[in-house]
Length: 306
Length: 329
Image (cartoon, rainbow over all chains, first blue to last red):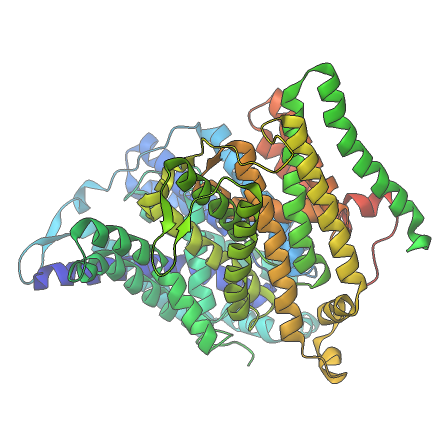
């Protein structure tokens, strides 16, 4: 096991981690401000990926596609907020789960209707389709490094947005007391639509970026959605800092588990069994992490409001 | 309960209808509809299980497919070993495969109950959204375990060649199998009625409404909720065993989170905390699937729209709509 391999796996962990953060940040923002649990967040991820792949295919430019994906996801988010979510804010979580579950069915089938049942393929922009040499030998795809950079830029941008801008101030105020900021003259409906659209755009960004690494297909958002849930549960629901730490933790545990657990088992077991048990344990590792964190801190690592 | 006669009348009608459908189908020789009715009864049974946790205990479990699937796998794996003539476990004690229905049911109840005790013990430390997501995540964990373990078919699942045998009954006969499912469904509803009506049930409902008050009168909410959660999982687990028997096939799809969502839909469509709600919910779901699915393969789109409409505009579910006001909370 060379140093280069370990370094590569660490970069993979980071790449998964930042993408999960971009996904989880929207989810946790919407929960923090509106108290809404949104299962359809994965559908917005899918919308971003599909529009990016479609427009990139038509125009031949990945970056135009990426822009289209972001706009489409944000628009879909704003529409869903105005048509459906608005009626759910003062309902209990059960109603929210069910309504957003229905939205998943609608989005999945609707996407299949519009784009057909075949998966779309999104090519990595040719300027990025090279690899960068790693210290210690071997190379690492440039595109994945760009994804990491996008993720870090998103984290920094969100931090600045929330701590330094007027909108961020209203978001923070909305988290702690929504009646009061309404009374102070902030149009709460517009604020909610805006927050939801930002969350949706982030999901669309993650979908479009990851879409170039895998096929763009119906239902692609659901495994990511569940990972994002694990992330925000570990981090503390509503906390963006928690989402960042949680995402990096989940990225590390998942990637390293898949890369190294079967080798660990191979020290004690014959190869075939070691691979089987290693794979099984690796796929369960993040859930075990979550269970451990929650047994220790039932409200996550960075609980919001005590 | 006498003053709720309109709901009682409605309940009797639902139970009667579910019984009449397969009898009619049998008389007409349409055996397909008998198995549809069996599916409704089995899925309703899973819903009755969830209703105990969700409707009466206020525990919004988004991971009940885990128990449904575990029950299914417990029964399926034992039946598979019985077919192969091998043992499930040789050490520390020998567990052989089995084709006895009662053994399979017992295994399903035992496995889903034990796992629910562990999942519940951790999950019930949390509440609200955390509880929803943790139960979902645990179910995913079990799903991935089933997918990645090659011994029992992994992702592809496991066909079961053996029909289990129940003394005195022939389960390979569709109608007999339906009656067994239907009987278990009514039994489960009856047991939930008794449980909810008992002192334990009063404590459970109080835990849903106000945990602080329950603690103040000297009852710790945690054990009450955990017990209800385990019972709830066992009922759903039994449904899983029946489902596997019906299909002759076990695969990770019965552990998927879509199924957790669907079981939840059965409960909510019928009406949360209504004893017969899951039957209405499951029946409606299957009817929509069959009817809309007959017109267009995009039935899920319309199902989604209908569900969304029910959540947004018909609180209290179908029974609430037809049989009068929602329960007091």
